[in-house]
Length: 241
Length: 199
Image 1 (cartoon, chains in turn red, purple):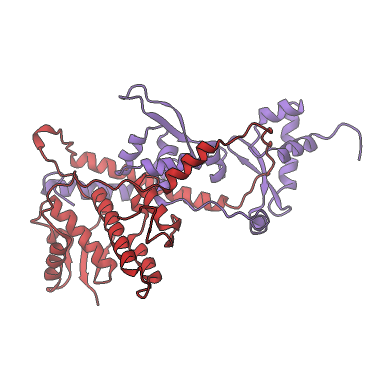
Image 2 (cartoon, one colour):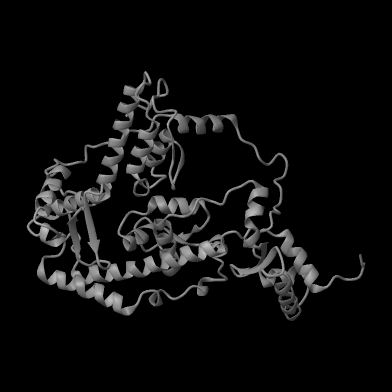
């Protein structure tokens, strides 16, 4: 990812998302500093916005495309790293937390309650929005507020400095790719709708997770349909019409 | 204008107008020098005068006190006048974290992440910045004494709630049949495959 101050090809690219509005480079900085959760950033929307502003006749087009592809790849890596199960290098040294089905059921039911609570809160916040209290507040005493130039310089330095590139050393050898699982899903769909449980019956946890990601990806692209009658119910993959 | 002693409702009204925060009954008694049994009827009178049907200002009972605020029906004009947009809406993750703090708080960041099943530190930081969550102490029994988080007065104001008790109990939010169905589904799946092997 090229974000150095001189010749930053993407410095004029701004984005408008639900969770953020402003320069793309700042968005990257916020994500890398954990100020913004990667889950909240729709990567597909970012790509769409970039393609909208892309001008192939621009003399810097190649540099811009390269920078964008590099940064977008880093975001995908970050997101997938967050979503993927942690690969244990040496299982003997790690006390793996084993969750029994009873504990899992307990956790999920607790989470369902909290989630319903969140929905109630959303409705209450929406109903309560638009109440503006008195704007009266005590003004600060003269001379009490002062901002030293060094602090402004420090803030500017942090805002405009090159974000630290995420390390990938922790990633183990990748033994499965989305592409492989996409092919598996396509092959299964030739025979018609297939249940996700049947699809991953003989897969290990990593393959199952990647198969799930592949199915979501294909559904987002409109290449298949996902249906689930109720939360936690059976998930069915159907060929797109 | 009369020079005589102002009525209780006038005194209270003046205090409300000068305060950006909810004012408690104790604070009203203390500031006006009036007993609680005189404040009560005055508040009732103000509630009638400042109702959404009668005024562009409404009297709200929020966060353990009373507050005058603009009528939401007039918010478009107020926001245009103040030339400021409402804060960006909270994300689904943020409401889940607030729900954890409301129903299980005070609790640590780790406890929130455990309930949600994902790391919630970034969401918590955002809510701390917005004043909807606050660190209220430390869990001395846990290694490192992590900070305990709880909802704030701003949270209650934003939710239009007088107190924690103003929210429906957590157990009433999900139908028991729904929970039973989920439990049965997980337990039956657990009977057919070893734990942790399902996606």
